[in-house]
Image 1 (cartoon, rainbow, N blue to C red):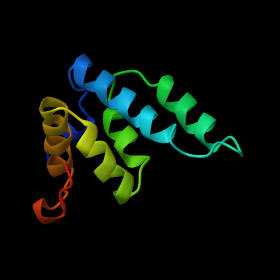
Image 2 (cartoon, one colour):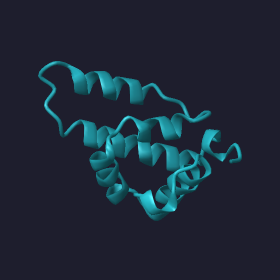
Image 3 (cartoon, helix red, strand yellow):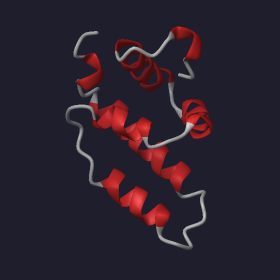
Length: 95
């Protein structure tokens, strides 16, 4: 493992991931403020450290699959490289 998992991506990749994670959260019922809580946490994130991967970690596998389908190739590859660097087995790879 290198430090790639904890390395911020290009701003364009970070911004795309941020936008797409918010889009997915906003598809859920916000009756109890859960969506507002998640979205406000994401909106405040800066492109530093492992915040890129933190957004991925906020989702279960089903929503990670939805997210992967929404991302462009460059951003998807940035996620994939960081997951592999963090120890994700290739056989379990969604991105």
